Length: 257
Image (cartoon, rainbow, N blue to C red; front, side, top):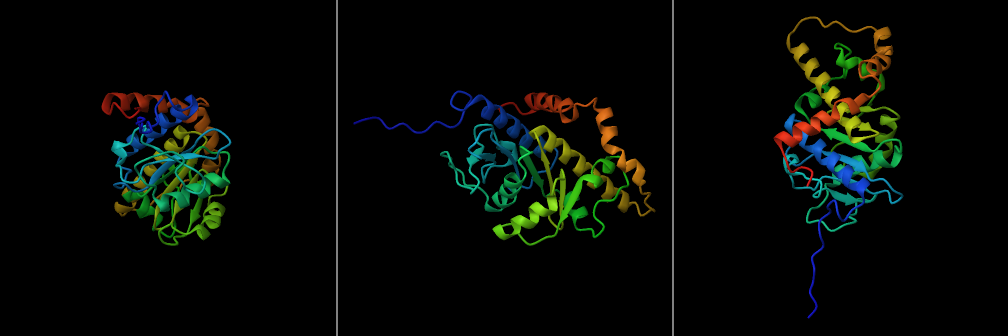
């Protein structure tokens, strides 16, 4: 009888180098997100488009906690949500609905990050939304859209409205639901979410103080992009991301396996 060999999980030897590098980056984003308290058990997602013409992207295996995710456990799916490689894990249909809509419409981005954090949902439930009351907020309010809540994202007919409300922005507040960011790299989407989450946390705490809030003027907000480029010396997220991955290596070795 001929031997039957089980398929090998993705690893740095059996996938293209560009895909493996992306897997490592994405697994790192999941681990750091969990460390900062952005995860919600096995729900919410960070997805990334794999380079190439196949229009495949990577998403977390439905059933694993963020702290368990590794480069090899990420699931490769197509634009219809079908797994294109063997995996023992399914894919969350709600995650596919949101992420596939954004990836299909925004060819300028690689990564989509979506959270249900307590502070993010709290601000998303406020009629006035994100307020320009902190230094962190000035980098967001001019580059953000809002999407009204339509229930758990399971229906494809919501996709056009989701894409419309995101537009060409980097930030999207899903009302009564959570936060979403996009980026040309995993690092860019992750840093955008860090800023988004921090801004929501500051707003909730400021409102809890009960005092009158001081809004930041529109001229300052208009110059926010230029100030950010100056502060990061034009490197943006590339300045901080390598340090975060080094922290991961010290605290949670094995994410890149």
